[in-house]
Amino acid sequence: MTPMTAPRPPPLDATLPDDLAALAPKDQLRLAAFRLFSRLLDDAPSVAFLKELRESKLLEATAGLARQEASPAAAPLAALVEWLSAASDEALEGARRDFISLFVAAKHLPAPPWESVYVSPDRLVNQEPAREVLRAYAEAGVAFDGWRQLPSDHISLELAFAATQLAELPRVPEARARLDHFTLKHLAVWVPRFCADLKSAATSPLYQHVADALVGLLPLRPEA
Image (cartoon, rainbow, N blue to C red):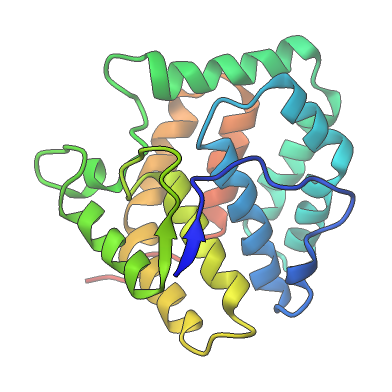
């Protein structure tokens, strides 16, 4: 099985990752963005990490892909690049505090990062959607490494899983069907609502722009 670490900071260098080269531009865009957003929605970003992201030009490269593809994510990604390039240390620290306010310190989270809360009737964590996505991970041969305990339907893990399937597209014939099924059955069902709540509650432009960009990378949910 493919170990899938609950996301750590991705390698940040001046170019997009090598394994994007074999993908179509639209898939390159989603892979790069999902990896980065998975990290930004997993843990409070340190000022040092955000400075590293700014210096790496990775975000600019991702925004460039979005612009080339005329993606709905192009404008929010460009706005994110502009904000990050001009952000002071105080603003970067504000983004870290914003994450804590959104996902850690609040008694009632304004943007719960779990699919179960949006999909289950009682709006509780670890309901059937969490079990469904865990089965999807297992069927794809993706396993958690156990270094952190997160419900399997946490936004960061769902994005990380989608990224693993995108990375496998050139080598694994089943990856496209798995990715499309997972996107339509899970990500497209709840992530737009999560992003609406995130944008409304966030005080930092970082998370406001992430919310807009993430919505732009997902298909509209088909009518039932």
